[in-house]
Length: 278
Image (tube, rainbow, N blue to C red; front, side, top):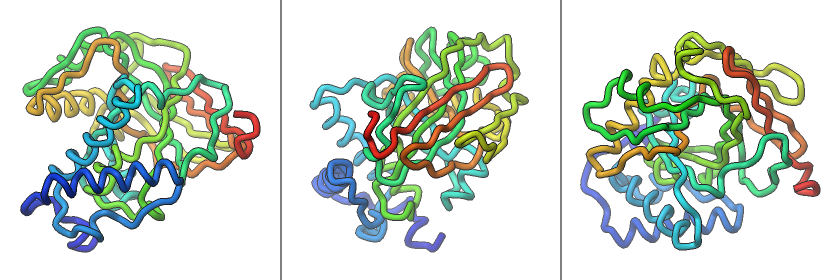
C-alpha cells in the first residue's frame, strides 16, 4: 500500500464529516453502487475516525429496527491481510438482519461485490469484557462453536480498501450463515482444525484454525480487549466470528458455497439465481 492508503495517525476529521461519510456508505448500500475509497477523499482519515463512521451506521440501522447480535473480527489471518493489503485486524458489528438460514436461498443480487469466508463461530454463554482477557478467559465464556460462512462485501469500489476504509464500512460485513451442529470447545482443537471451502462442488481453498491469530480463541480475546476500553462487552448469547481461515472467494448468483471444518461439520450457503428464488 502507498502512504496515503496506509495512514492511521494524525488529527481526526471533524465529527460532522464522519456523519457525512457514514451517509455515503449507507447510500451505497441502498443504491448498490460502490464509492471511491474514503482515504482518497480524506487522506488524513484515522482509525478512530473510521470506527466513529462505523458507529454512525450502526446507529442508523438500530434506529430502523435492527439489533446487534454479535461482532466479527476481520483481517485476523496473514492470508487475508495480504489479500486485502492491510496489516492489522479490525472489528465490525453483526446485526440480526445479517443472519441467513442454512440452505435457504440468499439474494446475491442484494450485494455489491460479495465474497465468502469459512469461519468458526463462537456463541457466548457468559459476557466477556476486557482489558486483560486471556485465551483461557475467552474459552471459559464460550457456550459452543459452529461452522460458519461469512459473506463479506465492500461498499468501496473494486475492493480498493485501506484499513480505514474497511473499518468505516463495518469491517466489510455482509451476512452470516451458521451451521446447525453445536460443538463444545473441549471436543475440538480449534488451532489444528482443518478447513475446506468449496464452491459449486469444487474445493477452492484450504486452511486451518491456526491461521486466525494462532487460534480463533486468540481472536476472541483480542476483540474483548479491544472493545473493553470503549465500554463495550461481548454479550451472552451473541455470536462472534473470529476471522477467516482462508482467502475470501467471490460468489455469484446461483452459487452454492460449503465450508467443512474438522470436528465441527459442514455449513452450506445457497445464493439465489439473480434473486428469482429469494
